[in-house]
Image (cartoon, rainbow, N blue to C red; front, side):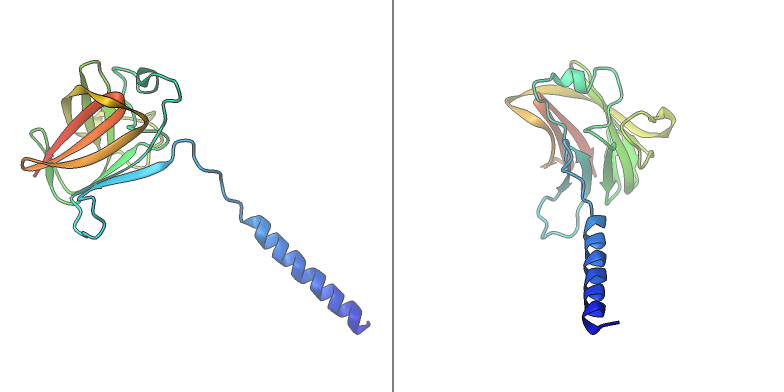
Amino acid sequence: MKKSTIISTLTFVFILLLTTNVNAQKFSKMDKSPMDAAAFPRDYKVSDKLIKIVYSRPQLKGRAVSKLAPAGKVWRTGANEAAELTLYTDMKLGNTKIKAGTYTFYVIPGETEWTAVISTDLNVWGSYFYDEKNDVARLAVPVTSGEEALEAFSIAFSEADNGIHMHLGWGNIRVAVPFTK
């Protein structure tokens, strides 16, 4: 076999291998409801977090909150996978003490109050597999109205007397879930 034929064949094989490798790396498009996280303290220079939640952020896109998070039904608190709540220290929701750990955070929307639910369920898609017997804590919290309408479902934390408030906001709906130490 000629030297030029061998070099051509090796070059072809090398290019084929590179092409196969590049094509094997398929990345999905961005989610329509991208995943986000909120934590307290929010400063990433602080390594001793107290609480963190990972959730997806659905957008209203002209729809009503009540269509996406119906009153009286358990909601995953966001989109896609159910929201995952991590407590880095023991805390209380209402009068119920919750040990440090990772849980699923659901809510049950209502007209005047939403019920916050902390469950031992983990790695669940939506709220389709919600099982009340796995609840660790529940607390009804009042709904208020915000001046600014939020297109994307959002969660933020703020310091409160002897604890932290987890603020849920979507459209003009605002809910503050109190956690105490």
